[in-house]
Image 1 (tube, rainbow, N blue to C red):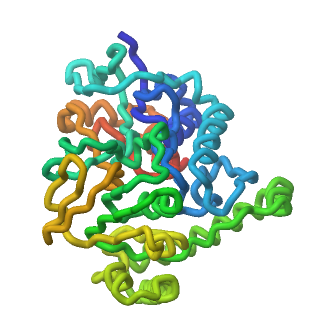
Image 2: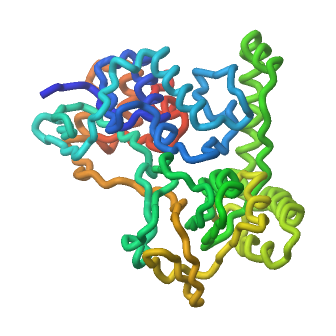
Length: 393
């Protein structure tokens, strides 16, 4: 059985950032356990049409690894995946990757003060276990009666069936969140009929996406501080949202007016606009960034359905009002959920295993303080988690 200092679950942004931060601190005895056959996390898995980040490229990247070559202000999926591969390679993480190692269970051995990690390809022990698998890594299908009886093609947007041609088909999309707002405008022009089943309309802000110029690429390569300055400006702008969400809602009023104006401008039909108008204050649900979502929904081959889905039949979706919509394909844009693994609660022995030893360095003491109270360091949703792991000294 292999014995390592740190085992990291997941090779997305968090897992790679954790590995890089630890290596910079001199912790080289680590492994990154990845169930898939390549690194990348959500940017490996989500390949639906139009998949892209809704955080600006200059911000959605590691602070220690800026990319002066982003093609657009909002990066597409393939480009982000390539970026992660490049960062893993340039920072020496690739030799630590164990691909095809799905973590099935993790149990704390009190006597040995080690995690016993069971994977699909064997067992290993680790002093520290970092769960960087992401909080939303499992596609979630909706609990709708009859879903398993559908005779057509059914798939989740996070597991897009690229072998299935939607051209000329009658398609039902269940969900109206961030993913649907990206792939619906892409498939709308090619399908015969598109039924978008919406439970709660999101607030939709304009997405000011554009191609970055060759001048910008040259500038960022020649003057890296300029790119850091742009990043800082974007960060401060995004923090205004956070301030409104958590401290004072008044800044959100301006953002909400921007969203309302976009809705009025892009959806002239009053009945459709009423369906798409949220009944809650911005910030209660995830805000969607899109400048193409509303125009797609106004097209003559699109039907926005707000009635609750009662059941799925072999060839149709039936709503509570008795409406029956025959469809050939159902695409579930219904988000993702977390995966449960067997793992006990932190114990006193586990906590003691991470207390600083007499004579330990300041860095070791800092790391022990940050991990105090649990043998697990969870950093599953932070874009640049190295800052949460690297000691401040």
